[in-house]
Length: 390
Image (tube, rainbow, N blue to C red; front, side, top):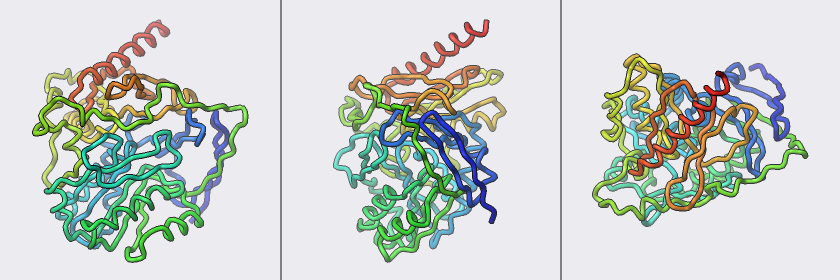
C-alpha cells in the first residue's frame, strides 16, 4: 500500500497529510477550511456529505451504498447511530442501504434538540457546541433492535475517536443492546494514528469486536498560524434548542424531524418516499436547476426529495445549513445566515450556496419562517452576485 504525503495551507495554518489508504480519493472526498473556533482551527470539508458543499444526490447515495456494502454484519439487523449534526444524513443513508441489504436496520441519531427524558448524554470536546444527547427509542424501534448483534456508529471523519468511544461505551451499557457483539465504526475518512486507535480500543468494552470502515485513511499534523486569531461569533448557537418542547402543536402530531430518526426509525427494503410535507416538488419547474436545502439535523427527507427529483431528470443539488461557524476563504466561498430555531437570537449558516439554482428549503420542525428566511438569503446573495457580474 503506497503512502502519499502532501501539505495544504489554510488561513488557520498548515495541514500536513500522510494518506495511507485510498489516498487517490482525496480530491473526490475532501477540501479544507478554517474554523471560527479557538478550540480547533482547521476543518476537513467533505465534498460528498451534502453539508458545507452542495452535492449531486446520486453521488451522495452512491457513497452511502458503498459504505453500507463494506459493513460486515454478524446478524441480519443493525442499529445505526449518526452523530449530530454533520453525520445525521450520512448515517440515515447508510442505515437505509443496510435495510435494503438485510432484514432491517434502525436509524437513530444524537441531537441538540431538547427532548423529554433523554436517554444518554455525551460531550464532544472540540465542538463549539460540545454537548449532545439521544432521545429514548420509540417502543417500535426498541422492539426492532431487540436481539441485534451489530451497533453501527457513523461520523463524517474521525480524528481521535474519543467521542465515539464515549458514545459506544454508554450505548453498550444499555439493556436494549445487551446482545451486541460487534461495533462498526464507520466514516468517510479516518485520521486515526496507531496510538489513537489503541486508545480508542482500550476505551471500549472488551466483549465486542470492533470493525473500522472508511473510504480513505491517513494521519495529519496541524501547525497553527500564530497570526490567525479565531473567535466564535457573538450570535453562534451553542445551546440546546427547546422548540420541540415548547411547540403548541399536539404531541400526537410529531414534526417531520421527529419521524426521521430522532426517536429511531425502522428501515427495510421497502423504498422510502419523501414525506408528505415536502411533496410540493410536484409544482416545481423541471426545466430549472434547483437546490434542496435541509436544515440542521433535518437532512434525510429533503435528501430523498432531491434524489427523487434527480432520478426524474431534473438538475438538482442538495446540502444543509449548519450551526458551525466557518471562516470565509479556503474551500468556503460564500456564507448565508438565517435565524436558529427557537427564540434565542442565534444564527445558523449555509456555505457555498449554488446561486444559479432555485432554493427549496425545509426546516423539519414546522416553522416555515425558518426555511423562508434561508431561501430569501439565497435569493439576496444571488441578486448581489448578478449585480457584480452585470
